[in-house]
Length: 186
Ligand SMILES: [Zn+2]
Figure: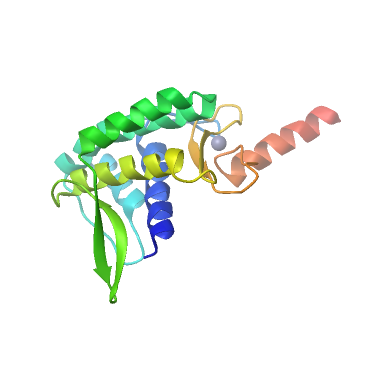
């Protein structure tokens, strides 16, 4: 995996975790914080990859929650333009998760990856979340963190476009707002 695709994957997982685990509104629909088996299911869905399909325990899924809640606060601060607060929160996440960078060998090449202090599910992903947000805020101007602008929606997104035009969490929210504007004009 190239470094950028590693970071993009970590950011996509972070968005999935924040949107799946933190309560609020999703395109007019109320989102409750999942607990128990539902929480485990949401975590599994968010982290699943092409050749990666883990089954975390309930305790492991719950251990990830404080990091995901902190990640939401980072998106909210970044969305408001409060970069100083977002950076403070990310620095706290990096400390709490004990994220560390390491060169991993794959197919004869070395790739820069982020790991937790041990190989448990929660600690590994806590480090992944912290590192992804750090790379988004400090490492690459083309990955902006935002909160959906559509009414009755607070799901988060990462804008990877060069000219920063993303405003909504999904095409569903985008079409909802477009349709409302169209109706208002008539
Ligand atoms: Zn939305």
